[in-house]
Length: 456
Ligand code: PHE
Image (cartoon, rainbow, N blue to C red; front, side, top):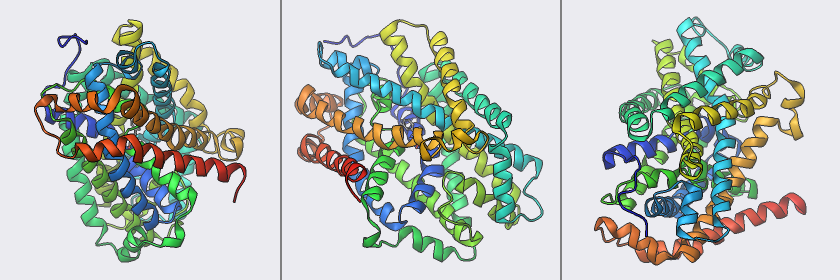
């Protein structure tokens, strides 16, 4: 049905693929978003739900997305069109492309902050004693100065464009191969340092102690959204990456490995940031600035703290870049495959347009009051809620329904087994994708809607 020799970039090896897909998954979602959302939503209760969702929903769905991508060898829109010709399913892929664009816009603002903090540590801004309050003021000074935050966002977008422009195996794979292992080693190092901070025990207890009564519908939907966001699911990133995966590769092992690393990194970030929080006595519910406000005080209190801090922000920027690359790649590969654009043109056009959408987010951290108050939550938080929490979860249901009921579990299994592997858990996967996952997500979303409009 689809020519095997279709002209398309391929990942050189499974190692390269796993690194690149893990690069997409691992990013600000793990290190910036996971800690602050966990801290705001009940700590251990959120973490437990998150783990359950990763295992029960994330892993099956990542396998489903990869199989759709590899079977069709297409971007999300083309994938649905190839596997369900003449249907309305390609529109769902279109929502995925749009979601990628939306996420990239607010994401690159936060990614820009990491660049700002690299500069701050290089300048030695945090040397010589800094209190939580001073650290907060330093963050505000950066994020509330319009030209600074726009410039940082623009530089980050430019970096993303330069990588995506290089094409798959040249750009993404080469970058991921070098950067991801460095990231991992640095995180382990930071975690070891963090758990030896004074007061670390209290922070770790908050992260891991499970209190049943802290579970609310908001905590559940946040944990679900974070599971999708963190694994780059529900918008076609993994469909796109799957399309670059060779037929001889074992999809299930690749998917599970990516999910495993991603979860490990999120937990590591928690283990770094929660003890740090407790030690600095900063309000855990300070929202998106949390990581940026708390950590300088900690770095400052450590021997060689500035170096410690510099390593952390460099690592955060690297992690963010491999994620922004995957977000832009979804948009770009759609325009290349479906509209016949040249990579160069598509990359600059959509990177540039996304930067325009990023500007109101960049200005919504206090620089422009009405954007900061936009719809009661601020423009950036609004985009985050729409795209990260809801759009991805909705995309997740639709992927399950598509693979389970439209394209079909059997063709999907055939694709998965093409590498010659048995996939012993196939019966379990079948039930999860056809029934359990879509129902579970739909129930969570239904409850949220209900509680927003009629309820508590
Ligand atoms: N998973 C990325 C992170 O954790 C964010 C992302 C979401 C990237 C969706 C691609 C698609 O930072």
